[in-house]
Image 1 (cartoon, rainbow, N blue to C red):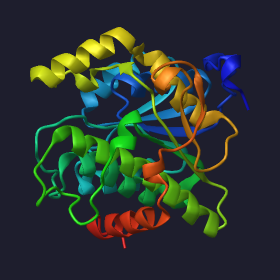
Image 2: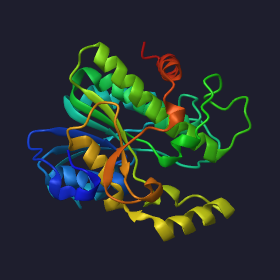
Image 3: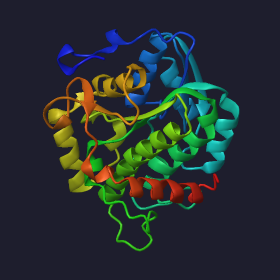
Length: 291
C-alpha cells in the first residue's frame, strides 16, 4: 500500500479492465473526475445520475466504457428501479450528496440531507449487496466529526432545523454506516469490504447554491485553500482501488486533512460508538422498508 510521502496519484491505479464500477452523482465534480479515471484504467463505469442529460454531457468528456443511468437518491422507487436494472457490480462508489439545503423532504418524507446522503445510499447498497464482488466506497466529509446524530429525530421533526448541522449529521451517518456494514460483511463471511473516503476541501459545485453570509464565507475559504476536483477525487480513487482493510477511512494527509495526497486516517471519535452504528442501521432498515 502506498504511503503519503509517496504522493499517490492516478498513475498508481491498477488496471481495472473487466470491472464494473457504479458512481453515484457522477454528472459533475468529484464524481465525474473519479469516473474519468476509472474508465481510463479500463473499467466499465455506470454514471448513476439524477439528471440524465447532465450525465450524458459528463460521459462525453470521458474516454472509455461508460453507461449513463437515472438514479434519484431522494426516491426509493428510483433507487429500486436502478438496482433492478444495473446488473452485477464490482465496486459501488456512494458519491452523490447535497450540502446546506433548505429544510425539505424527499419523495418518501425523509429530511433531505439524511434522506439523500445516507438513507438513499443505504438502500442502494443493500439492494446491490448480493451482486457486489469487491467493495463499497462511501464518501463522507471532514465535518462528520461535528455530527450530533439524533436517532430519535433523524427527520428533524422536533429539533429546530439547521442546514449545516443536518449536513454534518448525514456525513457522520456515512461513516457509521460504513463501520456497521463492514461488521455485518465480516459476520457473513463475505470478501466484500466497506470503506469511506472524504475529499478534504475541494472546489466543486456542491456549495454553489449556498447564499447569504454562510455561503459567501464558505466560498471564500474554499477559494483560498480548496483543491480542484481532480485532486479532491484522489481519496475516492485510492479507497476504491488500493489494498486497504475494511472499515478504513481515506482522506488528504495535509494539515487538517483539508488537502494533499490520500492516506489512511482514524475515523472521528464521534463515529466509533458501535451501538449507535447498529441502531442507525436498524432504523434505516425500517425507514427504507428493506426488511
